[in-house]
Image (cartoon, rainbow, N blue to C red):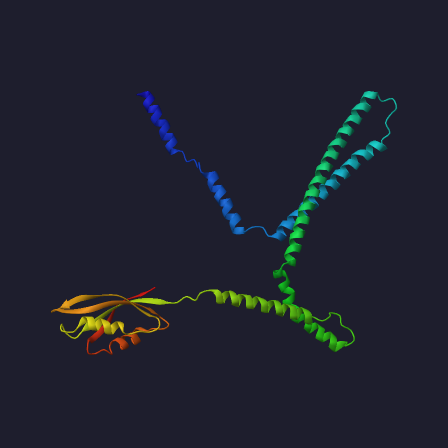
Length: 285
């Protein structure tokens, strides 16, 4: 019994503990959220970060060189007594050599970092130059051409003999030609796409006058109505009551060419067989 109570008390203690086992997962999710909210770093921020790293590296190199000079100058100026034993000279020289080796190693590492940063900066400059040479980058000078023309006009009014900016007629003609070619290509591409035809499916209820009406003749009259954009489908006779049956027929129409009102008017012209017509169902295709 005492062992059981001890186990129960241990479980109760664990149950009462408030430990956040999933905290690293929530911290990672919060970090991803803020990174997504801030957005990816721009190309300009990457260049600025690289320039800052280069400046810090240069500062570290200068500090290291200044520290080496400060350490060497006092020892060079200091006049050591001639009667100092050889063991002290050896210990000082060994310490100086050790410090010089560490500084050379640090300097070599800093030079390597600077070289990598310069390579990354050169890569970014090449990418910027490539983007500037792309057609999207060339569109900006074409838009700025009218401003230059206005400036040219002002200069010509001031001094007709001096042309500081030159003529932009050739640039305007080239830009206009490229614009026209793109418009023609877009029009040709758009013309090749098939036009979307809006169609509808109708279910018509055609009612006769009485039970003596010839339903076969009635259906023949209905199907005799022909229009562009009209396609008749299946049909059947549905009992209404007192021996009278109605003709239920389906058809597909093009919305731009055939209207339901025009179709009803054409069908009801056969007034010897048809009493009325109703649209039982109308669905877009």
